[in-house]
Length: 422
Image (cartoon, rainbow, N blue to C red; front, side):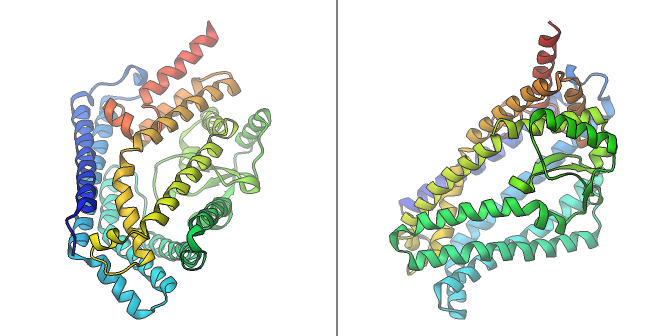
């Protein structure tokens, strides 16, 4: 049973405060959109008509309301599980299966993951087959949805096992400094997954093939040569079999680094627009944003591993949540439960860093191509095709947005173009 001490009361205050702020920000954003959603921003005049703008508003409101409902459900489930003492019960069940702490810990995490997947299924189905279908995005079939679910389950259990078995073994056998070795293994594991993703993991879900448009391919290669960047290939992916949303990205690291274009993007954008989008992505590599993000994740994870090492030896944390003894796997879970609400309040810092990177990459696009016209057109087309929110509340955007709001971003790009003309 839960003990009402300072640990649990502090957790509950931070947890409920985070939930309240999340709901408040969603309400503010929707209310702001309902007031201004009928106004076409100056940056989009001639590109967006009243009917499309109305669909943008409806899609944002529907998606946001659904996300808030899902968030409320997840918060409620966690509180019910804590108050009902289900975590100690589950730890007892897996210990009865296998008393060895490593295997018991692995079963503990796998069962928690499976429970999370099962609870998420209704929301996933509704989001995919109701909201996304209603607004013309989802092309998913029930068979493909089930296939994806099965593949994700198998892959996630494999990766979870490969990660947790060494970490739990280090806790048992490496002494007080286990967390340093575990962090080193985690960093190596993360690097390996990033390296393998484009050549092993991603092809399990989609078909990747070299870009068929030779003219576009030549333009991209010429631009990359000017940027002094090499990639293992330029690929298109059949993303349209799941959704009509469009995107392009760089993936992999080292020799597995490659450019990937959605087939939906190739079908709706001009070659100039696609080249400008990729120039922006190249900017992230040239400005070392990917490396900086990896270093930031590395430092953050090092702090987290240190906190885990400290907290799993703290008897009070186990007593607070109904455990009768020290169980390292449970200690890891409880540390995550305690840290997650506090980490929510750090989200604006990560968002600000990301927006700074995006602005720098936009400037690099201007330097590489010599114009921002194509990128402006691409952003407007992406916003229209993806029914993006053109009127986010400034507070909501400041807290969450990893990219500058579209109208602000286009204004900055136009300022760069005007400076060239001047």
